Length: 265
Image (tube, rainbow, N blue to C red; front, side):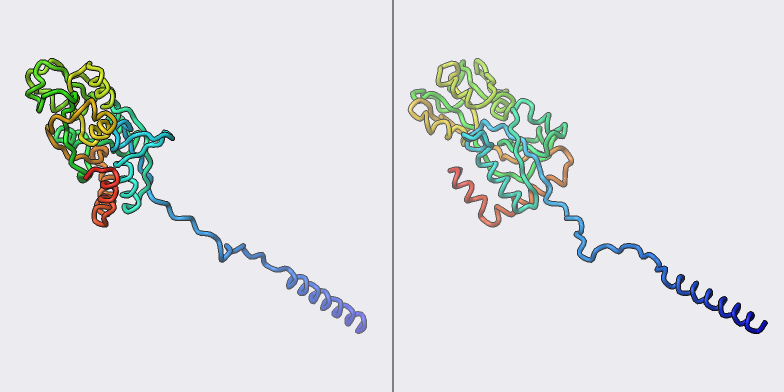
């Protein structure tokens, strides 16, 4: 009996030992920890602003041979973007719908030689002024006219729905003010004799006269207006970015260099 009891006790001890070995052999699974070198989410890049422009008004904005939107204002905005912390993209938009598109949010801003007026300020907000532009009267080379007083009974061509047309609305004695899709069309009509004068901004007039000085001339400067970038009414964030960039390029001389390159001094 003693031997049998000893054998039972020994067997039980071996069993307990075996269970202990098995229990120690089962390891607890650990949750995977993120890799130490895991890449964090990249910070958002500069805000991209879409600028609408009627690219028919050299040297301010126009299409080059590759159909790209270029010109003085385009270069100014791109330079301002680099200093103001935003990206600038441009879209060629016909003038007759350009402000409606801004109000509808189709783009962030309009940069298209826009004269800043009290009337326009009621519908949109403007950047700080970029440049002051004269509205000028262009006539035939041999015409003796020296101002609007000499245009009585005559027809003047303008780009429709622009400041050029607005300054003529109360002019007495004109036969008519004829609107065209763009300023060049008004000037070409003048060359053909369909109108006897054209009113437009001085930079665009100078650009056209560079190849037509034998037939046309600037007879008089009429009024001067500051031009600026228009944004949707109340869009303070976009306005702040644009103004920051414009201030920077005016302070460091970049603006003056661009102005000189386009012969706007």
